[in-house]
Image 1 (cartoon, one colour):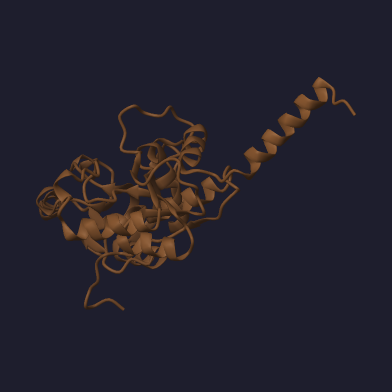
Image 2 (cartoon, rainbow, N blue to C red):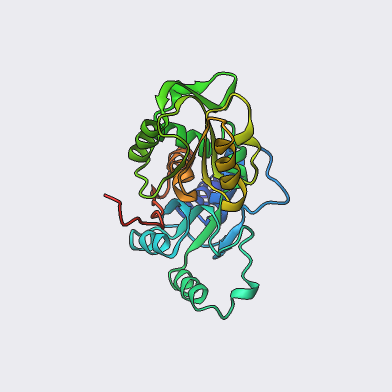
Length: 285
């Protein structure tokens, strides 16, 4: 029986579509979907690039994490996930430059593990912060239960009814499960306004802002913002500074990232893999 040209074309198109459906999702396709869905133009200059592996790697599962430490990538691999979407660097500098690490045993151990397990690590920092609303801040607000405290005039500021600084810090420690939080200021300080500077604080300006009672940060140089905060308080200005640690100050934002990825990637499992807090205290527990 002779097959018409139209039937042949339709059959070929159907076969092509079926083959496309059966083709495994690649890391490059995951990244293209992220770019399409993040809602902001993709920057030419950005740290949001592949740090290990290749774009054509078939993806078996995706792990989101705050920092792709060796522990994280090992746990992701053990769970069958070979693509890691990390917020912070993989190789110890903001730009993930490895030129000086080629003979470093720690770098080599980590890179060899990634290579052996055919893993792709993709950084998602600049554009997750640029997402509207900021993907990290959104996750942190949800984890802290501060949605009701957001200042309608400033999404980075939170309003409280005079809670004591010590009680606020304890509440944050418990909700985020922080082991080594540090606080500067009088624990009895009555808190009405709090600002969140998730991650690294590179300036004293947010702390110095008039009308602000408490600044929450991930980390800062102790001879810069920390010293400034101590001197501000000694000079008689009643303020507080809460230092969570960098990982703990942005971690929940990557839980939010996993949930966001699930809205447009359905072919493979997606799971948040927490980055362990690197510090411990002999008084913890």
